[in-house]
Length: 604
Image 1 (cartoon, rainbow, N blue to C red):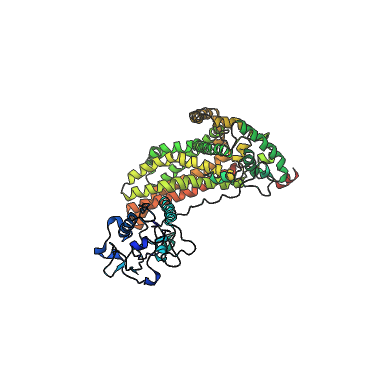
Image 2 (tube, rainbow, N blue to C red; image 1 turned 90 degrees about the vertical axis):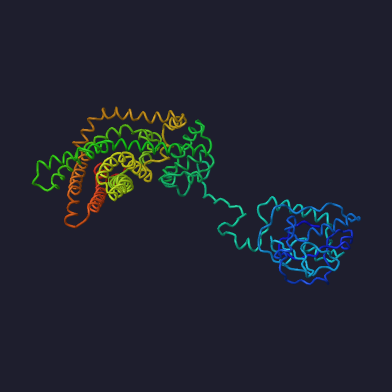
């Protein structure tokens, strides 16, 4: 008897009689003669509680009676004495069965699945479709007349062997042949999806060797300098280091006349990388990842050093100095509105902070002059590349004004004030704690102004330079001291951290050494004058507004104290946002180099 699990609609099969089992030596189980088959639809036997099969036979009711009949025949000398293979233990898919019934043979013996009308009901779980309504070898054997073997019926041993293989496969694999229910539910939430999901194909990769330098189109500087994740860039790179270097350097190509110089540089720098153990694409990408996060950290420290004068000076101003100055002026001028002494106080504070800010720039510039991997000093590229490639796309007054304005607005305005200070202000004011709000805001302003304001502004400015092609991985790979840079990156992490911290000591020394230059920048430079004028005037008006507006809103417009404070502070941050954009753009326009004369460039 075949132990194959039916894969379509269930049918009712009469149990075989002893006469049937003692039939031809082919050993095939056959049902009653075709003339006695009268298919009718009935209710499944499982629905009748009196006909519930034993637990061991809960899948095929009537199976125990067939086994008992078969056992008796074999004891009488049946053709096949092999034990009947048991059904696999894994339960089938529990879907609603469709049941057909057949009139039992006259010589069939009753079984646990037999109803009172002489019919046997076998509910079978459909696991796969079949066009003719029947499904497995069990149903087809039951319908085949005794002795009929059209096309050569397989012996019972062969059926057992094939069914055992099917049972093993069905137990090992996570899914059964698809049926209508599976097709309908495929893709629905919670449905089992046995098909393997293929990874999306990567885009076209750069050619190996130096072929990238000869391509019709070359990548842009931003293409070879992802802002965060290097995964997309890594998939574009070829497997060989020469091809990786050539692809990165191709972003510097301006015309086909640059190809010979870039080819020479690519071969030279590939040899340097391989001498330091960088021989595969994975090694190459790992170096770029180190360079990326190291330069991000350097930009953060650079920005904090540059903004240290303004932000460290803001701490005493916010907590005590501004209040003391305003109180003293109000005592001196009691007859004047509070806005007048507040205007004077703001102008003095703005001028003092501007002087500190300008003075700190000289030392920061010297400390971090050679601290970046992707922003090498000019002398590191002078002997490596033609001048028009080493100094490609130099900044102008217009580009610096645009970049500085955007960087100042993003860092000091959006990131520090918009994302942190404004929510704190609103929350504390709504909680009825205006005094706490003033103290917290006075601390958050300078303490977050160092990393978020100063550091964020430098990171943004460096990112703009990368987009313009003035910095990036291609410049790192073109460095004359590339071998020394790789050796430094291969040092233990502790040594690299100590090397970075050592720059703080260097910066303290540079503060002393650049003091004359700082004085000149503060009192005798266009950048200094511009900064003093903008910050002095801006802080004067801002302080006057903050000191006088709340009382005006409460008296003239009937606002509550909380509403007046929130309105005033909100306007303060709006004015500060505009002030940052104006201040950054003005410093870039004044300090940036003039655009080269097009006529001079064309005749050069």
